[in-house]
Length: 311
Ligand SMILES: [Zn+2]
Image 1: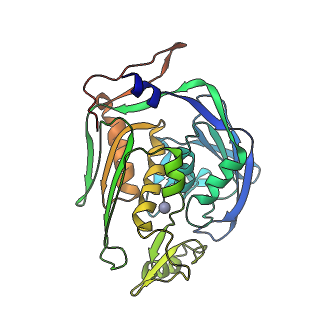
Image 2 (image 1 turned 30 degrees about the vertical axis):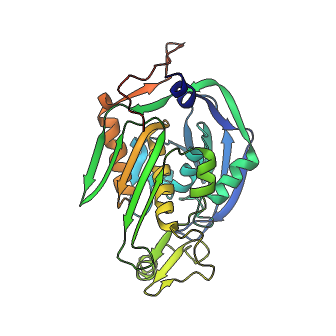
C-alpha cells in the first residue's frame, strides 16, 4: 500500500519557462505559432487562441471537445483549435499538469507528425515541480465503451497501463499489438513519442480534394499506397502504426483532466472511441476515486482500497 502511494501521488508540475515554435497546420497548410507557458497550480492545461487581437481561452476538459473526426478539436468558432492530440499526449506523457498553450491559428502545428518536436520543446523549457499534490483518477471498477464492433475499456491496475491492438487489411500493417505495463515519461519518450501519424494514399487524396490535409506531406505523415510505405526513409519502428495509436490515446485521455491509474485496453481504436471512453468514465463516477484531492484546503490522501488487484 505504501509503495502504491509513492507511485501514484506526485507533485504538480509545470514548465520552468516559456518556449515557442512555428510549424505548418496539417489541414490549412498555413504556418502556426505555438507557445507553451508555465501556469499556477490547479490550472490544468488551457489553450489560448489569438485571433485579430482577441484571446479565446479553452480548458482541456471533455466538455470542450467539438469534434473527433480525423483529429480532436477543442472549442467552437473563432476559439476552436484542432489537432491538439499530439501536443496533449506530450504534456500528458511527460507529466506536465499545468500549462498555457498559445496558438495564433485554428490548429496545432503538425511538425513531423509525431510528438518528438513537442517533447523537445518541453525539454528545452525544463520542468518545475510545484508545491501541491497532483490528484490522480484511480479506477476502482471496469468501465467499457463499444462502438461498431470496436471496443475500449479501463480497469483497476497499480499503474497507468495500456494494451492496444489494431487490425488493418493493409499488408504493411495487419494486426499489431502493444502492451505497456508502466507508462512513465522515459517509456513515453523512448517508445511512443516518435511514432508518426499515418494515412492511405487514396484517403489523403480525398481529404485534399475536400480542402483538408493541405499541409500534409511525406515529411509529416507515413503514407501507404497498395505496395507499402511511400516515405523514402521507411518506418521508425516496425510497429509504428500501433505506437502512434497509443500516442493519440495519451492525448485523448488528457481530457479526463487528471492522470489516470488503471489499465486501458483498446481494440481497433481511434479518436471517437477514445473520447467515448472518457465520457463513459466521467459519467460513471462511482467507478473511480480522485486520490490526493484537496478539500477546503485540507489535503486528503486516500489510500487505495484492498480491492485493487496486483498485475
Ligand atoms: Zn495522431
